[in-house]
Length: 278
View 1: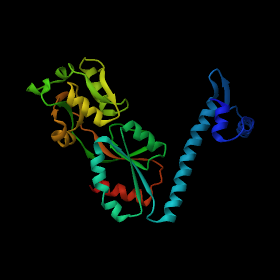
View 2: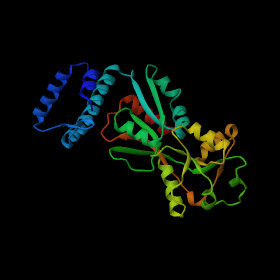
View 3: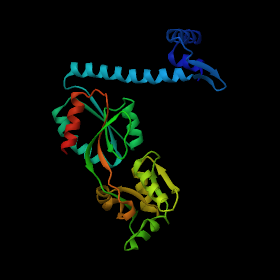
């Protein structure tokens, strides 16, 4: 919003930047920028142009990577986003086989929750992501891998563990350790609580770290949600227990997420193939 800071960032003088903006507006025959109380802002036409330019930049990045991959053969980089609960599945699928087949390749893992991973795939910052598929996302292609069984997670000795058949009414007496906003499983729990008359839950802890959620659950009476397989894996070290709540019978799909029009290098395609075979 500030021409002086923008010029400094670009390494040009402010008058040169101003002339550049004027040429841009003359090229398109429309006002793209306007001075506002908070600084320089885009007009609606400027906003539309920026969205087009962003998509063009991603396409150009794809073209550069394709040329690079074609010239380098098996040498290259694969940028993979992975949901917190699927890290072990993806790493075991690729290591060591992928690196044995492609000894000069580099694999980059970015672990996160769905909302972040979807955004990074859409922006072209990840080749693909392996995560939950609870919702439909514009401009993204979803390829299902497996269906998981989501359960409520509490500490050993939690009051809910003493009930023979706990219900969502029993669960509503406790607060939660929740993933950050934008995670589909969280929205499903909130929707079910609202449906049964308990309103939107006030989360005691919100974080993008699965380890932080585990720490909160194992040291307090908070609850969270996790795939049953993850609970079994964590049971020995974190002393967590799975609680089945009939009203929260959730079975999320998990799979590979790519952009509809994305270029996928031979390395990325091979990585996806190995993950699907796992």
